Amino acid sequence: MRAISQDTLGGPEVLTEVELPRPVPGPSQVLVRVHAAALNPTDYGHRAKGMFLGEPPFVLGWDVSGVVESVGLGVTLYKPGDEVFGMLPYPFGAGAFAEYVTGPARAFAHKPAALDHVAAAAIPLAGLTAWQALVDTADVQAGQRVLIHAAAGGVGHLAVQIAKARGAYVIGTATAGKHEYLRGIGADELIDYREVDFAEAVRDVDVVLDALGGEYSTRSLRTLRKGGLLVTIKPRAQENLAAEAQALGVRAEALLVEADHAGMTALADLVTRGELRPTIAATFPLAEAAKAHALGETGRTVGKLVLVVRP
Image (tube, rainbow, N blue to C red; front, side):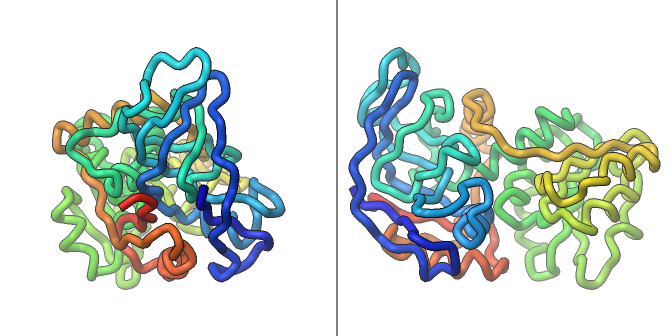
């Protein structure tokens, strides 16, 4: 099968197309014929620094949408021919940038009929991150005030829609040029972080979803009401964050996304109800993965970049 691999760490140019053996599903696994695979910022970090995966060679990618080719021993959820989408177990299950992948059956869910494979591939990692932060961790309720940083990004634009589906009042940070787009997907209030200090402009927030880390995490604590919660998806960004939060009478949690059949099913239900729709910034054929990485690393895209494996 064709796959995108790398032999060294570095920039997008280290990504090359290779031929690898087609994997075989083990017990409780499915073999998926990949139609589309989305990029996430974690792909760029792993490509350049190894991070959780260590030294190459390795095949990156966690977001998958495709068709079940075969199933391993004990799998009852799917049959060959089923359309599925999901996130390969993060961080050690990478391998989506290929024509076939294997993964735990319960890392996937049935693809919503309302989405093609490109749109479906854009949801899993970013959507699960937003869902696990806002729903599983924060239990966002109707009427609560939710601040979402980098609201037009991969996680952010899905988080805005998930929070709105829960009935929250959503405040987003983004550059001014992205405000009209964000209002279109449901944001109630927007802050241009280049012109306004969000930590002074926003108060009495119930939940902050922090996709940036660093000083954004610590400054965001000041926006929370007493007892409010900050969830950062940069778990290594602030070692002292919980202590600083406690001193202010608020809470802080650091989240690392997990593969999750129930979460994927919940996201699929939101899609079916018309409450969640990913934005596709651009698509690239599998062979042009390096170009997709280069664009993604500019940090200027809205929504998600997707590799089309099978047009």
